[in-house]
Image (cartoon, rainbow, N blue to C red):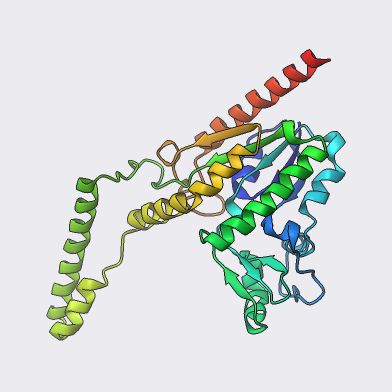
Length: 296
């Protein structure tokens, strides 16, 4: 099975659980906004990126060539996987109207800092400006897939961020559960305040510690996932409306893998989650192949 990916770790990690799959094209670190208004690579210094893969992905974004790379292989592809993970960090809007995805690599090599100093501004994910710019770019991507004869082979992986690590219960969102989390945080703050006072610190400093108590790792994951999933809603709804096939998993159906090779993140899932996604991909591809055969 020959696969093209326009997305990031959700699709790439799923493909790794498909021994029969060959990822022919992998378009990562590439917001669809760059398809319409790529900034170009001439003025961007990527010399700090030591990875050939990172340089290739960022250059593809700067040139807006992600779809072209997929279209070149159109005749050989069996499936195109899309996901929206790379949209989460927003994009840089330059004064000339061009854009650049705000990937981790762009920040690492200093290009984001240089862009800001040059007058570019960060358009943050979830804002109306970001959504409507993304929407236009996504339409361009889908239109391109249709023109290349790939639309019926395209599958959107609509996987919410996981709010709990493997082995833990999915966080509840009802009022009682929220009250319980606030109470536990208050208890931790009270203990820290007591320790501050026992160390001889002043009351004002002790009260500051009470107010600034940090969430636990579990609470942080839950809060990040809930916020991201809320921001993604309108993106996901529109993305689903534009494709013929979608695989969906809600936050309570997946979990964060503590042993993921890239580290625990709300979008790094358990092996069993990937196996479930892969089985859904296989089922859809098989149905597409059957439909194609019946149409002949």
